[in-house]
Every structure is written in C-alpha cells, then in structure tokens.
Image (tube, rainbow, N blue to C red):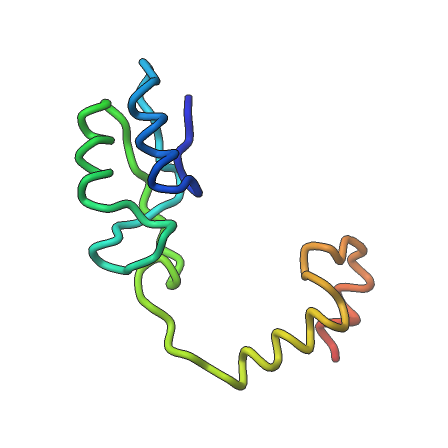
Length: 102
C-alpha cells in the first residue's frame, strides 16, 4: 500500500503514474475547501479515484479551514520552542508534567 499523504503535488502524480496498486491518502483533506499544500486538489482526487484509491479525510482544523493569524499564540509557541524544543522531543513523562504546570 502506498500512502500519498504529505507528498508534493508532483510526487503524488509521479506515484499515480507508476503504481499498479491502489493508493491511499491516509490523512488529507480537500484543497478546494482549505487551500493547504497538504490537501488534495480536485485533479488529484480524480486521479486517486481513477487509480481505485481512497482518501481518509483528516478533520484537524488546519486541514479544514485557514487559521487566522494569532500573534499572541505565535509568540507563545516561539517561546516554548526556544525553551524546550518540540513537545515530541520531551520523552520523559515527569518532565512533560512539569512543563504542563508552568
């Protein structure tokens, strides 16, 4: 099974052009609804259907609607990443709990 989520448009069409197996877009949405590079265009959806593939619609808000700029949130995220790096980088549960308390 080939997953085309996170691919560029060119890579998506390259895969559709060479694979004989149906493909899946395991966590994408529709670019017509929300103009995100991670969403599929109508042309991509038609190619996916022609390939016998499927799309699993991702219902995270950033895939469904364009987020309005939020300077306060962006400032807080920047401060967090400067202090801790990414949330995923904090593996120790005790440290995660301490960060949550701050």
